[in-house]
Image 1 (spheres, rainbow, N blue to C red):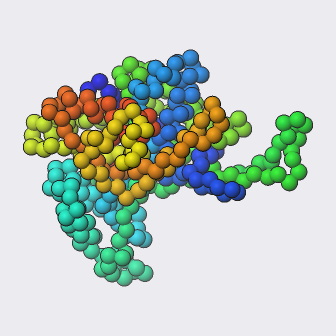
Image 2 (cartoon, rainbow, N blue to C red):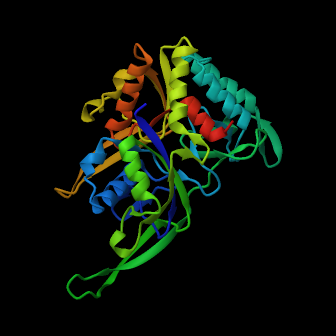
Image 3 (cartoon, helix red, strand yellow):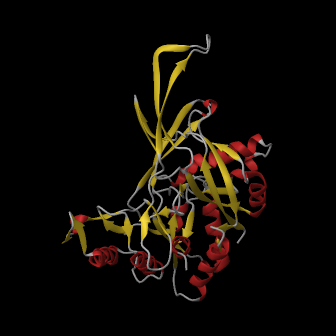
Length: 370
């Protein structure tokens, strides 16, 4: 492989306002994760200020969404991850079994098999507790697809839904650019991500860019979201490494996963999981890589709005509805290993901020260990 992966840890140092959806006098903010496009833009801006040409980086780097890491390294739950509605626990052994069934293709990517898998998983959970009473009911079981989940401890421990990034409420007044005094009665209220929160994410990039990033970003201060000129949005990169959590070299794991598909399994596809928004049918011509040509089947329960902004013209670009992180994709294999790897790397790097795809078995190893 010519593409390498970097694991990045960050801490929010000042209140950070990253708007998810906005209408007149009202907006919501991201709390389960920070979108990949925001992270990507912050890195490009920082490097540009350091004198590094953004065009040198643009199509040689992609990033995942940033996920909470205060209690453990979380990743988005894939479809069919189920739990009781009043619990944040996920059975670790059931999660491993789900990943294995999908990766080793015990469950085929067709409607009949997927429905059987869903019923099987519900049966494995069986009962949930309401007011201390155990009740067997499908209505008490929910899907947590897309939610950040993490696993700690040994094999017997359960996994959990990671708590949302904590927020605080801020107020400020409008200031006249002429008098530098406040406007009477003009008060702004903001919800912002709280200082001290830890997040983490992945960067896929060329080896040349990896060296630049490791040299320039370690302990760097980058800025995200609104109100940067007022001191908001300061985020520190505390570490950047080729190893996930100091243990796993993701590049080696990805290579091994693809090699096994060719050498050990009689398969015509590789199962991938998206760690960022995923382009869907109808929008493929808007992006350099026509990814859907290689996607046999896509399974997703979440969507994501992809919003662009033109600094040149000061207007919003079109808003695209994409599949959310945690989506599963069956990618068609090419004739040989090298051709497949080249296509996978092309998809990874051709659409900054979207289509950060990882083999499902590698996702399982990072999340569950072992």
